[in-house]
Length: 162
Image 1 (cartoon, rainbow, N blue to C red):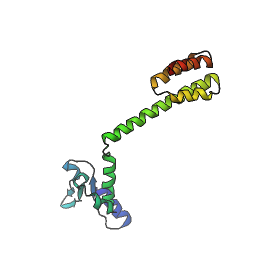
Image 2 (image 1 turned 60 degrees about the vertical axis):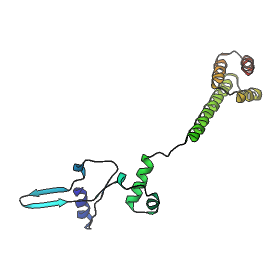
Image 3 (image 1 turned 180 degrees about the vertical axis):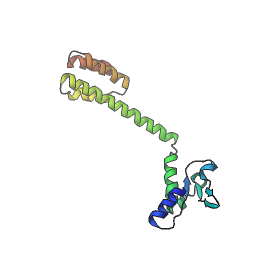
């Protein structure tokens, strides 16, 4: 810390204030004063040390404070602590994920049909969009990749529709 202090002082010729901001617990040796002594010449460099974890959670005060230390505390808290997610939110996220997978599987199936047989007829697209299980869609994907004609695929599609 002293090296940085002195380099800034030497280059700019201004008084420098050093502050150690720790985002984790450090051994005392890492935050101890820097001391040098030789032949009767002695130098001790002390600096304040602040542990972010010890600052408390006074969010109202931190949000109003533009002090660089307060900004650092807010940033640390945002990076280190994920917001609490309720079970209802988790359920909603899971449902959204499942719907996304289902739609992606539908799109993959329609792409395979288009690649194999050209333009996909509207009735085939509508029937695929009505299917609700990934297992059924994956079975039809295998059919689309291996069947001989669009009519054969349509037969397989009618079979899974009931």
